[in-house]
Picture 1 (cartoon, rainbow, N blue to C red):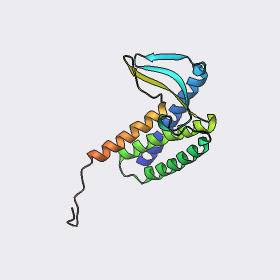
Picture 2: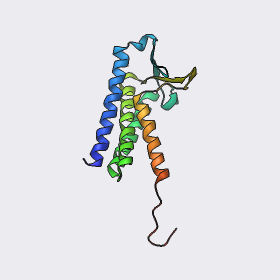
Picture 3: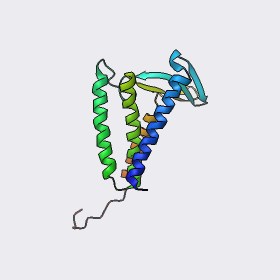
Picture 4: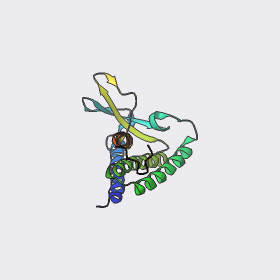
Length: 162
């Protein structure tokens, strides 16, 4: 399989997983009523409408369309970057980021806010933000890109420059 096709396919898988789980949270679990569902000893599901961007930043009135527009431009840039990428690690990381970003834009356009529901905690210490599958894919993809860049061996200069 061509690496670019794999990247776009991963974006579609992340998007489907993100939107599918959000649909289940909204329509199957009925968390709209403020209920909390303990999923694992370290994970709860609780519905939070994120009107801002990552971690609720820029959640002011009228930001919905602006944020969706900026995110859409970023998605286009990610698709171009994915197409131009030459290695599998970058392609898959960018695919994960793209799928998560599209899922969050879809929420913003459909609901006016992003559906967040995953609450992580360890022994009474709670991660300070509630997030979703798309957010997880974005964070993991960015972490992989950073590690890939940090661990990449420098290419020797062929013209004698250092």
